[in-house]
Amino acid sequence: GAGVSQSPSNKVTEKGKDVELRCDPISGHTALYWYRQSLGQGLEFLIYFQGNSAPDKSGLPSDRFSAERTGGSVSTLTIQRTQQEDSAVYLCASTFAGMNTEAFFGQGTRLTVV
Amino acid sequence: QKEVEQDPGPLSVPEGAIVSLNCTYSNSAFQYFMWYRQYSRKGPELLMYTYSSGNKEDGRFTAQVDKSSKYISLFIRDSQPSDSATYLCAMIAGNTNAGKSTFGDGTTLTVKP
Image (cartoon, rainbow over all chains, first blue to last red):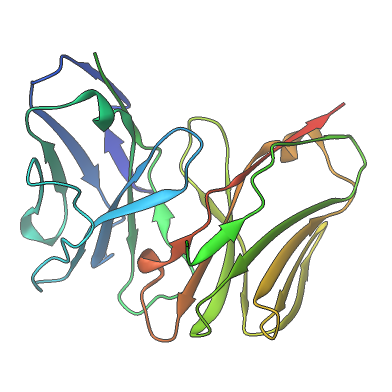
């Protein structure tokens, strides 16, 4: 597609349930990032994939959070046993390797844990 | 203390006003300075970027970087209601991918007609 695509746009889940969020990056972009944006807050880095290298998981807040990137393209962020504090907008971004001036963001998935 | 501090706002201005959005930072290694605009329920989009110190102008927008003071600004002239959005500053050091930028918390701007 023309841009970074995320699905679903909105997700309401019950506390304790697992959720999967999907990101389809721009074709040809080798770097993919997940961020969390809580209300009125900036972007909190979660995880970074670059090509076939081991992902940088340094931003994952707990072991309930995990992510995969299959075939160097689509990525899935999984949150297990969701908690109310997980409620936020989850943003995905992709870039070319070595691009240091712009990250291209999807529209985000708004997660609400009730 | 955060590496990047952004004036929190929110800001509300009348149409046609000049708007100043500001960030300070502590990491002297930052070399690329970006401003992203985020409309409600959308992802951030790059508005402008500047390398090192200096000014950069694009239409009604001017980005300023003062590395000696570790201070950056975005000026919006003749502000329009369509400029109403959250503005995020972002910074990155050297040869680092833009996705690893350090972001400010954002300033929400409302321009009233």
